[in-house]
Length: 556
Image 1: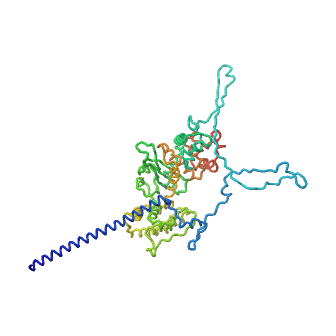
Image 2 (image 1 turned 180 degrees about the vertical axis):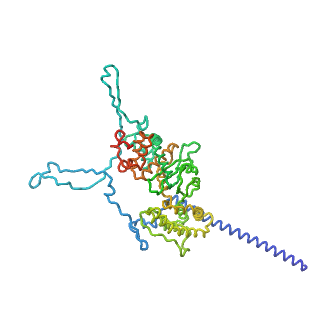
Image 3 (image 1 turned 30 degrees about the horizontal axis):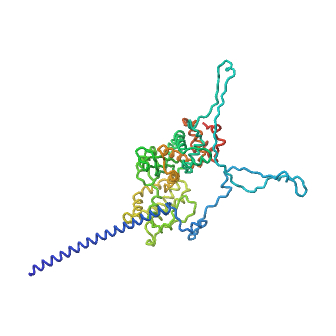
C-alpha cells in the first residue's frame, strides 16, 4: 500500500470517528434535554398529585397553623420576645344588651307571710333580690289571618227600597290569590339567602310549625315578590353604585337546571359587585349571567368611571373607562400554592383585618440557600399586608403617603427579585412568577389612591356568602329563580353592610313596597341608609306591632 493510500485511509478513519463523536455528543445533548424535561414533568406531576391530595383530604382555606400545640394554646403566644394577645372576651351583659328584659317575681305564699318567731305579718323589702338570669326562646308561630270587611248600609235609603253601601278599605294582597304575607315571604327569603336553608328544608320546617307549604310554593313566592317589589329597590342600588368612585368585582360559579340553549350540567355564573372603602353606605349587588364573558361586567358597569378592584381575570379588561386594580391576595396565593406541603405548615398568611397581634414578617436577605423562591415570594407579599394593616385606620391621603414611603421600596425589591428568577418550565412557581410579572402594573395601582385596598377580599367575602347557600341548595331550578336569588342576596348583603336587622329590612320592604313601588320619593325612604330604615330596622325583629293593618306611614 502506498503512502498516499495510507493517508487517505487514515483520513477516512479520522472523519468516521469525528462523525461518530459528533453523533454521540448530539445524542448526549438530546438525552440531557430529555432528562431535564422528565425532571420538570416529574416535579409538575408531584405538585399536581400533592394538590389533589390537599383537595381531597386536606383543607382548602389559606389559613394554616404552625402546629396542633399552637392551635390549642391561643391565649398568649410568645415569639422571640413578642407577645400576641387575644381579644378581650365580651361579658354576658355586652352579649345580651339588645335583648328585652322581663322580670319574673316569685312571692312568698300567703300562708307563709308571718314571722316564725312572733307571728307578726311580714312586709317586703324595698327591692326583690336577684337570683339568676336565663334566655327564653319562643319558636316561630304560624297563624291564619282572616281579613274581615265591615259593610255599612243606610237605613233611610233602605226604606225607599234603594240600598246605599260603604265598605271598609282593606289592604291588597301581597300576591293575588295567594296566602303569602309580607312576614311569610320575608321568612322564606331570610332563611334561603341569609341562613342558607334550601326550600326543601324550609318545607320541613313549616310542616313542624303546622303549615304544609310545598317547596315549589315557597320558591314561587320569592320569585314573584322579588320581581314585583324588591327589583325596583335593586335598580336604585345599582344606579347609586355606578356613581361611586370604587367598586370591587368578583364572580363565582352556579348551576341552573332549566335554561334555554344549555344543558343542566353546564356552568353559569353569579357576578358580585360591591362598593369600596369610600366612607359612604355599603352597597352589595349580585347579578346572574349564563357565562363568564367580559361583556357581562361591561354591561352591568356601563356608566361607571372609577377604580375597579378585581382579580386579574382578562374579562374585566372589557370594562371601559376604569382603572383596574388587581388583588395582591391572588398573587400571594400562587406563591403559597408553589410551596411543598411541609413548608406550608410554618408559614402564616397575614390578614389585614385580623384582630390578632402579629409580628412584622422578615424578608430573607442572608443565607438564601435555606429558603426556596416560593417562601421568599410569600414573605414579600406578607410584608405588604403587614404594612397595610398598620395603615388601615389612617385617612386616605395619609394612607397614600405612608404607602408611597414604606411600600414602594418593598415593591422595588420584589420586582427586582422576580427579574432574576428562572423557574422550572410548567411548575407552579413559574405560574406565580409569570402572574406577578405580567400584572405588576395593575397589582401596584392601589398606590394611586388611599381609598383602594391591597386585596379584593371584600368582594370574595360576598362570594362566600353565596357559596354557602349554593353548597346547601346545589342548583337553581330556573333562570327566574337565579335572578330572584341575585336580587335577594343583594338586599341581604347590603343590609348587613349597613348594620341592619336583615329580616326586619326585608319584611319592611315587602310591607311598604306594594303601596309605593311607583313613587320614587317613597322608595327613597326604603333605601338601607335612610333615616326611616335606620329607625325601624336596627334592633330586634318586630312583626307583632308592625303589621299590614298597623304600621307607621312613610315620611313623604
